[in-house]
Length: 68
Image (tube, rainbow, N blue to C red; front, side, top):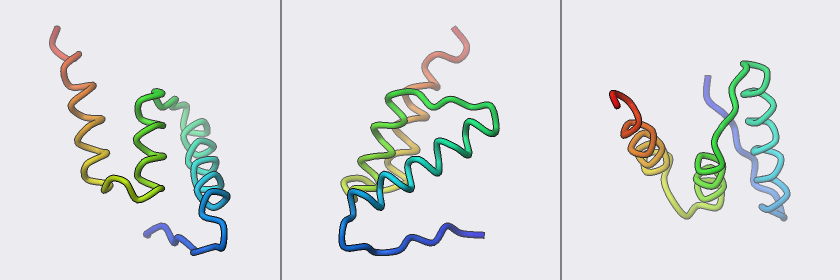
């Protein structure tokens, strides 16, 4: 199932709600996103970057630490 986003008169409030919901879901799963991932999430919600771009930046950042 996909996520449904609703347009509101105040996108900042809507973005904060989405970010809070994602945070709660991750905490429930025992996960803690990095500050870098949170920043990219904010940029995505603001329409500054695509989800693909955010995902690639997160992978690139963390992939370099594997195998060392």
